[in-house]
Image (cartoon, rainbow, N blue to C red; front, top):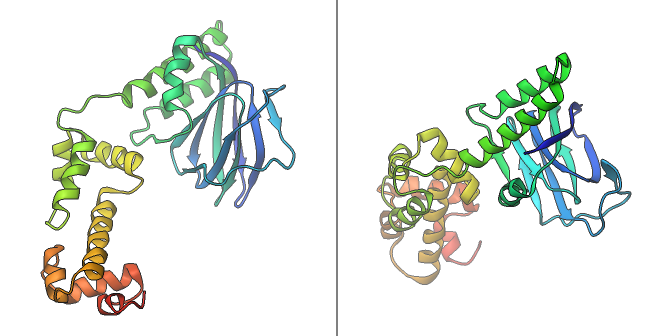
Length: 268
């Protein structure tokens, strides 16, 4: 069972930076209205206080988490991280301890960005806010129960089994049939998830929306064909899913910056 240590709301201005810091506990950060990024790296020494701001700490910029409206991140103890908002943001911070069994699950879900598309986790944040402000009899135990239930919900919803073939199968399907007219809703049905859930899970796994992934796959193959073959451009267009050459040329130039002909000539 989890034990709540703190719960508070922070309102940040546009272009605000929270300095690199670490916590002695786990922290679930829920962004209700926000857009920004967080760089992180594991700290070498344990935090001595609830929030340890580490002066002039350099963070590896390769470890990047990008948050947006109604997304959340779970930070483990003693992990150095910062927060940088691109616009004004409202952020709820939930600090807690976890038992050994819960920590095993947290290890798989920490340092990832999750999108609360149907506001399921948000209802727990609201319950915490009400219980924390009203402080009725037994409120501390209730707060611990809400945090525990919220974490179980995170684990369950992101461990759910699809009724279809799953995300990996869909990715393999796209890789094989990227040149065809692929309907995203049909991909969702194939995966076994609802269309909205499918889009969220696909982006979490691949870093792109399904549509962007399909277009990137086409672009990747078009570049390979232009580099390695002397096939006519109309043929390259057709074999990569474009029946109209002008549409193909416009797509390529928009994404690469030069026409297919110029790319082939070596003027990337």
